[in-house]
Length: 64
Image 1 (cartoon, rainbow, N blue to C red):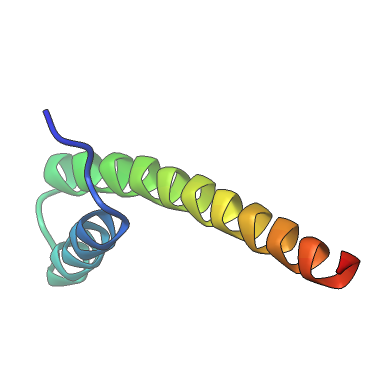
Image 2: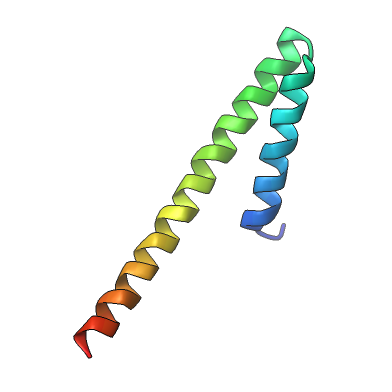
């Protein structure tokens, strides 16, 4: 299975928010909330990694 991109995960999270705002059943809302929480955590990790890479690049540029 191919790795999901940041963009596709973000799109799914946005979809989950729309579904929750629409007012699904309590059981469905709980499933969506759990999926959204996992996606949010995964996206946060990806952003942290990107920030670390930017910091390294900035430090390398300053060292020149």
